Length: 362
Image (cartoon, rainbow, N blue to C red; front, side, top):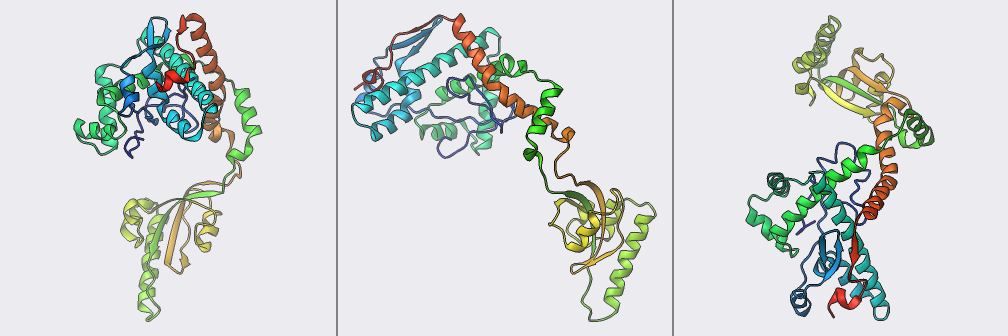
């Protein structure tokens, strides 16, 4: 979130030290399109600490790439600010050293992944990054780059810096998809085992999808009004019995709010319909048209489009959700194996370890 705006629907931000994982919201097919970009980067505040950051130092070298101390500070700043409020020495130094090491480790992993993305030619082009930025602007109601710059400035971010991170996140999501997620395999036995072991996840309330014709029933002030309404409903029912399309009859005869949508009332669960309608909806055969049903709202005719009565969704219906759950389960270990392999093949030199004086420039 930047300046009170959510930067979502474009990029997944990998967890630090993990190389990018999309959670259970995040699912198959969503890796390329619609994941949330959480931007936690801030520039150092003005004053002595910011001035000292100009005198940069090398924190680590990953193969031929340098990670500077200011990069670590930039990543860790929100936690540093919190820690300096919550702790005093000597515990403060220990906490700062821990935060420094965590963020340095995360940057090392990210650098390894980006190097792998370059090797596999998965780095986005300038036009792809621009397209992602345009999408972000559109989702947040921003029309120009100047408006985007002002929004980023509220968090101490520059457009160039933000553009760089957007490109990085696109590359990270692509390499994680290729190197990890696409290599996760499971068989039918695993799917069935998960289904049997997690029945509670697939429990549901019986539901029915129906179309509906409503003929308003006038007050009983005279016999003529109700009689006309009954005749109208019977005429509609006769057309349906003769084979007319329910949607066309609904448009011509229904007084209800769903008339123009062909009477489609949608999917409703048990307990959401009037009792008189519910009894019929859950008993007549699917595809059948009911007789005229009188309720306090008027005269009703319904057609059952589909119905699900099983208290637990069948395996075929639950299969896609199970596949995603298994992918999420296996992702952690597969991603960890990949990161460890990258580390084994790399040359990593840590120049600055968890020195609280270094991270805060005190």
